[in-house]
Image 1 (spheres, helix red, strand yellow):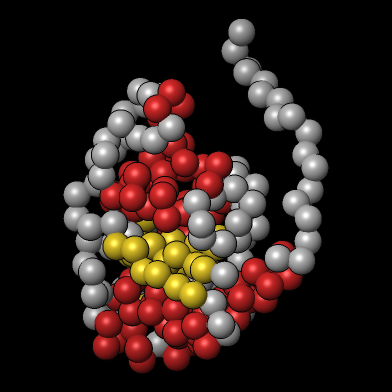
Image 2 (image 1 turned 180 degrees about the vertical axis):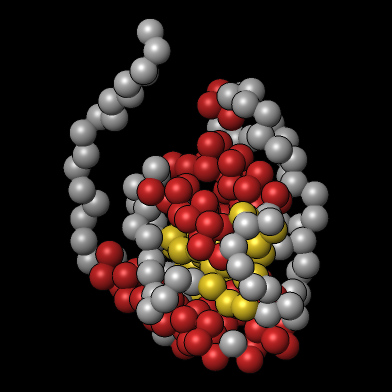
Amino acid sequence: MKVILVNGSPHKSGCTACALDEVRKTLEREGIETEIFWIGTSVQNCIGCRQCALKGKCVFDDNVNEFIEKAKTADGFVFGTPVYYGSAAGGIKSFMDRAFYSGGRYLADKPAATVVSCRRGGAAQAFSQLNMFYTINNMPVVSSQYWNQVHGNTPEEVMKDEEGMQTMRTLALNMAWMLKALSKEAKPEREKPVKTNFIR
């Protein structure tokens, strides 16, 4: 079993990476293979061209398509973001817009979790914002003992957030538990999706 941890911060080794690394270490102790995937510093926005439906991948051939290829064989995901002005960073939002629209079928039915890093406030909003992606895509959301957040202005400060770091370890334990439980269960048979437009 494998979990991909997506670092949605423009800082490859910053506070978000510190939180994700704590999750990674516990997952690996539980026998789960991991990979940390950094989205980089320049992510193209989704332009709503819908060409991915025809091509099977996003028209912008960058790290989003690279991630989708990896997602095909992954069993679970953790998406991490810093908090910017009370919401997720722009890069991770653009990344997830494109990844879920063009490759959502490769993420569906696989457990996912959000990790947020902030200096002080705004974590709950950013946390909720990313969770919306999973709950529209049949992805079980993995929880912890508290909302999945760490606090600090530097990785060193994040390491001192004892409750936050414990929350990361508990999240990893819960992810490992869910993956092992789901591996024994058959996927549910669902109805064909119905879409209702409110303006006709």
